[in-house]
Length: 190
Image 1: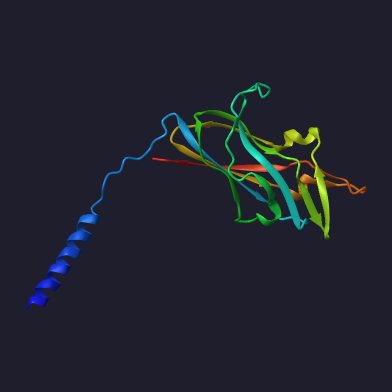
Image 2: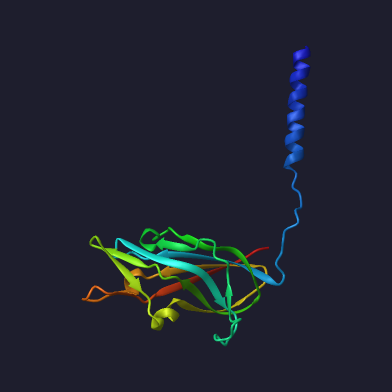
């Protein structure tokens, strides 16, 4: 008899515990009344190159119409800087460069990858060092032309067109002229 009482007590306790814990609770959620969240991811496209290594130093947004203004570009505090082999990051693979960075609401003109100097490609077992001339530096800028709204997540995907970005000439010299597409998805937070 005592084992039946103990068993019933245990079952009753477990049911009570499950019932009490299954009740929904209202949790306060953080809202972003004057800002939005931004993520930026990058991927390469299918390529004739077996390697396409590009050095990324930062990701920036242009928030002022006059791009020569020193405050026109705002850093998004990239988390995965350094050299990335974009030939390995294709199809459904991406590298997150910016992860939920809080950005004030307002108009965004452009997004820019700030590139370093360490760029190489490999084709048929031969590695080429890519040089990026000043004429091509603005090529790492893509037009956005969007108003960032409060309480939204803006997810940017930069597709780096590897084959279109690399110029190999007959002397073995290689130039980097970045060609990119930017896709944007917007999600409401709450």
